[in-house]
Amino acid sequence: MAERMAIPAKWLHVQIRAGRILLDPQPSGAYLFDDTPEVIASLHALRERTVEQVDLRAHLPAQEGHQHG
Image (cartoon, rainbow, N blue to C red):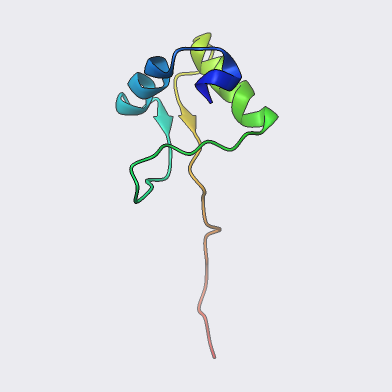
């Protein structure tokens, strides 16, 4: 992602460690980013300090009510 955005990889690592970029944990320890215009725009906004945090975690839809079989 750093290469795609033409920014230092260290900047991404610092933002992740500081909790400003939230990602789902990977068993390998890698940081996976979706290569979409929305993700790139969100990271640019963080870099430009127009937002304080970017949440890139996959959120499961909430299951409400009772589940009957």
